[in-house]
Length: 340
Ligand code: SAH
Image 1: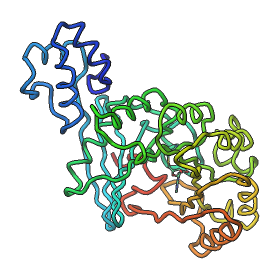
Image 2: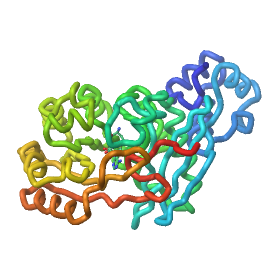
Image 3: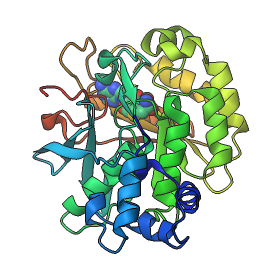
């Protein structure tokens, strides 16, 4: 299949425009259509010459993903089921809260990491998303916010973003470039299970925020919950986090899914304190969201609060995530494009 025109960076567009013999200003004009508006069909890009539109269609794929279903939660969260060219689907979630409007973006259809507590893992990896399929999630959500600007973009949807590194980076480039969507990288967060080499690269190659999904403070437990830990055990992951050169964003953010009786005991909190010693962190506790076939129970709310207080009293900056969109299976760890 030819590359999709909507995955090209401005330099790639320029190179192609030159090679095809069109005037060079046509590259930014084309980028304007591709990235600054709705997902316009190439034949509707009316100020481009017909020959250029035809050349685009000859050399590239031009399709755009579309929303096939929209579900609205009682709490205002909206889940979009997005159809791709090959009939695969992914989900993205729009989460309003106070003054914030967060878009949760998918980076893969399915996921290969096999975390035991996550619904997406049950799908296995179906495939990586192309840059245009990542960016399209933003372009599709924007006109559906009732006029509110999206304030935060989080790669916390389906898939492991750092397992799709090059395409993720191109998507981030399109999202943040002036010629692209012009989003500030400070508004973007990439969440990862902790693929160490890619994590180190991302910090060098972009200035987006990073969140590391930890969920266990000992190798013994993390090996069981997150098989990736056998490849990148905690000492390696934490050493990498200590080395990350985070100039403006001083703290590393960690996420921790609270599983009743598994990782929510006092001694787990004490292990976390030890793990974080000497490192400026922000810890976000996520109440476990159940899904069909899941074998864990959520920690009771008062246990989550005690756990947080224990960490706070030892100087670990800890917050509790308020789960949204559970009634439409849109909360963390529930995205499995079920019922499609
Ligand atoms: N693969 C990346 C991006 C997905 S983010 C990552 O793991 O970071 C999804 C977040 O939701 C992760 O922090 C993950 O640990 C968490 N999560 C997964 N399953 C969950 C569940 N059932 N309930 C609550 N949170 C879950």
